Image (tube, rainbow, N blue to C red; front, side):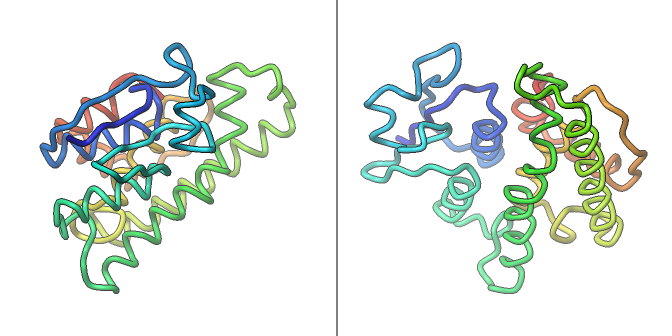
Amino acid sequence: MLKILGKSSSINVRKVLWLCAEMEMSYEHEEWGSGYRSTEAPEFVELNPNAMVPVIKDGSLVLWESNTICRYLASRSQRSDLLPADPENRSRVEQWMDWQATELNNAWRFAFMALVRKSPAHNDPQALAISVASWNRHMQMLDAQLEKTGAYAAGPGFTLADVVLGLSTNRWYMTPMERPELPAVQSWFERLSQRPAFMLHGRNGTP
């Protein structure tokens, strides 16, 4: 059986848990990370040299990086609705997944650490202001995309792009800071909130 390693409050673990719930996929879950078993433990580092969650074990396969795990699980279940088989539509989904992991995540990192985690290492007001502005600017890019599609991040149907971006958007809404009104993002977020799996693992009170 599929095994998921990582604490259930982690934004990246929640991507995987949401997807599994969405696909009604059975799995075993082990809590690893802050407050649980240390990811610095030799047995965990052997699975992921980055010492970060999530990690999955599926038979002999060990896999890390949350977006890659999501791609694998959707492909494993032959869910072409979530990750299209044809190159053109698949690339649209993966484009927004990669944007989430590289551009959007980098934009919010300092602001989240300062405002939510209260990290002493993130107390520079100028750096905070830059991060908030960058985060909001990237969310405006997502708003423009959603206004264009009128539905979901990569087009008319729900895909993996919405899973990874939905978690990031929940974090944006839950971080105590000023943010612009983004009507397309708000409408999309409410559409996501009609999905029980998102309410269980995405919009569940954890930023």
